[in-house]
Length: 119
Image: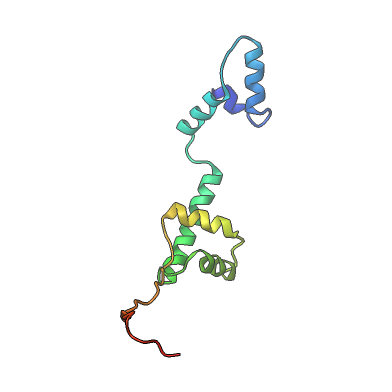
């Protein structure tokens, strides 16, 4: 595994496994990816996503935890972030945050169907 990890910048993992399989080493590329996930910590993309999620959460808190997906996306654009609408949706789902829902007002009058209706 260390050999594959050391040479991954020269050849793709799939290509190296293809060569190994041609020489009677029946190993799947998934073996390397499991090894990598277990031993090398988070990737750069995972770290970037975590930082963006943290910034988005801070922006949501700064707006009194009421902004939904659309308003939070627009607030991020106003703050100068280059972030897409769908990414905001995905990060909000990942964080488990949502905007405040405004419900319809409660109807308190119950009409009597026997009363005459005026035109």
